[in-house]
Length: 174
Length: 191
Image (tube, rainbow over all chains, first blue to last red; front, side):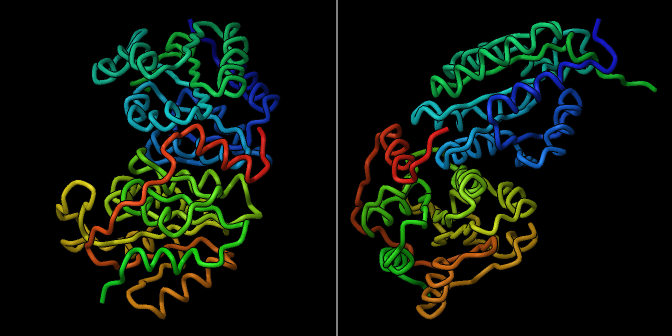
């Protein structure tokens, strides 16, 4: 079961800070809400709200051109929006560090989330992404460290998949 | 009146200093920038359609003491219209987004773009919160824009009305890794 008020978003934020991330692009997302709050409250990090996730891929490329590290926060559906823009990272070897909250897997109520959620892993791998999955809060920090190394050490594409079991199912009735 | 694209690009980039960083959008604006004189501080796009303005934003945020000019076409801008909204709320003081608008998709055979049928990119940029939006359609306005690029201190959008023509292609370096590495080396950055 997912935890109430889990602390993995704070651990993830600490990882980003340690890694020297200075730009974070995101589309608002319930699973990333706490991490987005941390990013917005940090004066050293440019928080960039995006209209669509592919903007974030281009943002991160621009950041690296200018000598800064960026990270992208998105939901599984956002991966589909990024596919063509990943060409930029693949052709030029721009670091791409992504944290992806899953929908459409564990106890999903909304069937419209399933088609994209079910193909996130293969789509990312086709786009030459190293994928690290965290199913429990204890796995998040380690996955983040490996992804950070793959992105900035290897100028590669790295994604940490934050499972729906970790995040908790969306509450539809209150 | 419509300007000639190669001459317009040459005017904008004439006498550029080392603190002007240029992102030419894929297609004709990349060839125009190459024709104006290759420069390590150009990051030419051969793809990533719709991404030019956002690359400019990431670069502008990372390099607040340098000036960034995204120079792209109307078709490329239309594919990333949302990025004007994103830039409009960030408002970096060192970013100019300049659209060479000829109303057609030149690289694919001159098919009409939305701007030919009334979509007004200046109005879009203004509605997204970019305070300074310039309509450039003659030499005086172009010279004014070139001057502003030298002392940029606000988020700026400009539409440069250009003629639909296809001057001979001048192709820049095509290796993305090499373009990236020489750009970063010119800036002296590592991350």
